[in-house]
Length: 132
Image (cartoon, rainbow, N blue to C red):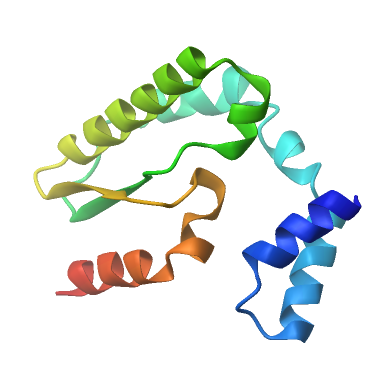
């Protein structure tokens, strides 16, 4: 738990101390939530998405984290991690290509789970682009 607290403290180092501590406490207290939220992906969610039809013709920017996933790096061999990242990149490119006004952007240095914290300017720029 101390190691995770230290990693979160580093991730949120630029945040005000009160907010940083609240975020860290929340993440450490709710880490199982993501596991519970994804439990029915294979049995329900994916089929529901497939049955939903084509995406509407709306502007879409898909952001892809350009850095490798540090968690995967610890538990999987390098070739598997490379293939997984290539698969995610291909999936994101396909998502962007699925609509006439889709765009795919890779955010260098960002990791998948924390792109919005590590590179908020990339997210703000995408929103500004969509707003026109």
